[in-house]
Amino acid sequence: MKASARVVLGLDEREVAEEVMHFLDRDGARVVGTAEDPRQLHAAVQQLEPDAVIASPRLVRSGPSMNGSVLLTLDTAESVRSLRASIDAGARGFYLWPGDRERLSESLATLSLTETSQVGTGRVVAVYSPRGGSGGTFVATHLAAAFARRDAECVLIDLDPLFGDVAAALGRANADETRSIADVVPVANELTTQHLDEVLWRHPEGFRALVGPIDPVTGDELDGAFFSSVVRVARSSCEVAVLSAPRHLGGATRVALKDADRTLFVLSLDVFSFRDAQRALAVLEGDLDPEAIGFLVNRAQRAEVTPKDVERVFGRAPIAVIPFDRKAAEAQDRGRLLPRRSRLGRAFDHLAADLTKEAS
Image (cartoon, rainbow, N blue to C red; front, side, top):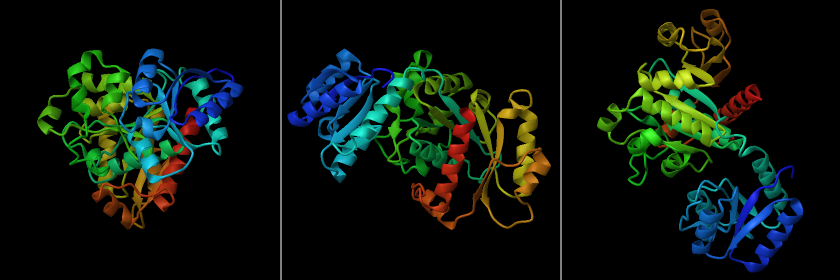
């Protein structure tokens, strides 16, 4: 390893803990503390503030705070219970010992080289659909999942202060325990990454999500300055922040499009979608970097308007064409994402790869 990651071990099997400690020592990581139960683990993390915590799923099931440290879970056997505990605790990775020790080493190497340098430099990708029904929420949620599959720490933020469709698309609309963007309003003037981390919900696909307000009245009171603060802090807490922007060109949308490094205009292949996109671009002229704008065709199928018309109308070819799939609407209605191996899953993986290359 070219840099030394500071690690706290929270493993309840002493023999395994000793093996892991010796392996990490040879590999260049610094084990700065150990723990054998949740109480000890919590104390070690709070006092030592390590870069990473390697812990047994059983020790993090009760949810001890990681205090901003990256959580990696490790076990000697794979089980649904261990995987579920790891997901619920927000683990960035799950590893089997000793078979996955090289993967564990690679994760720590990546962490030690990039974790501190990424503070304040995360990339922001805004997803904006000028015409309602073109699939902006669908694109934002599946793009976040695709980034996460590329091992990027991704945060998906719903900036719609009224309708908050991201929660429904992820199956969290009626989950009473789900916290929302409204929960950071009280600390808006002093918002930190820790505040944000406390209200983010981790999706099984690996990305974290900040859903819109459950109460639309509360959402209507949020302004552009508030959303700008959220985007700024999100940028410093992850590698990629995906912003799901509302259609209306109010404060939240203008912040998203102005602060984004890349803005994806989601189009459907119909005259009204093209017309609405042209109108939005006219209103936003001067506020957006033209080079940051990309056009994405969603639900593409045979029609009089074709993907080639995007270049004719807007002066550039679409950066991606997502094909129509009947399963998409059914999955979204049920709060599910389409699987990676589906045709649309592969399309979003390609898009995430292309956007990642742009940033390198």
